[in-house]
Image (cartoon, rainbow, N blue to C red; front, top):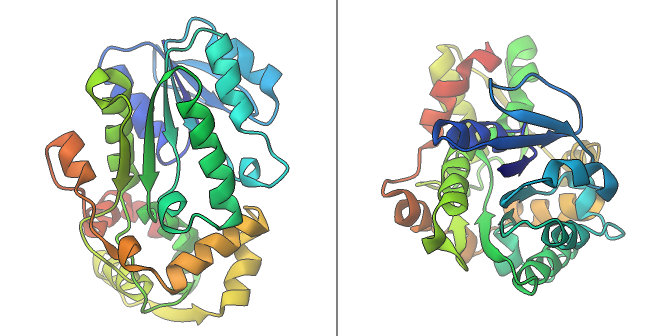
Length: 279
């Protein structure tokens, strides 16, 4: 049995599908009950409430750990999840961490994530750490404004990073959960090209066949929007990266190719697969 947390999200959903197609028994964990593919066990749990996660770990050999936004807050204790997993007999954990742990180690949310990584390394479990950069699926935040107003609003319109398709993260995670050769690996996951928010908007417009207006938000405007969903520390750390990425954050990592034997998907391919949400 493999437990997938965040199973209804942009990484968890394709990961659950990939593991099921590989013939694995999967327990999908999310906060709310949702429909799952045939054969997938679902457990509603809040990772901030350890007792709610315990039933999901029964009989599990491996855990994919994706921390929700509130678990990045300074007073959260996400490392306790690793201790619980070890106590329940889990043998392998694949942790979805962040590129910023290496590139921005002093950011408050990165310090907290580094502590989770360290707890995993010291747990005695088999482990793999995945450190993605920006997600292509962050563009889903524009869907409503694209549909209703023909507008994309984002900060730092001409500053790019190599965003990664979450489906690639899911495929890498599946490989790491299923193949012992990846034990002890730390993989930095990026897309194949640096792309700016303005270029992303142009890609969506081209796929729609109609122009979109680009409205550049100030940092404060973007922070106000982001803190409706994530702790302020995580919002600030993210804005620091997307406003002025370092050379390390602009680097195209070879790790997707190394794990999957193919290049990562482009943003254009992500848009083609998800264009319906923008119509």
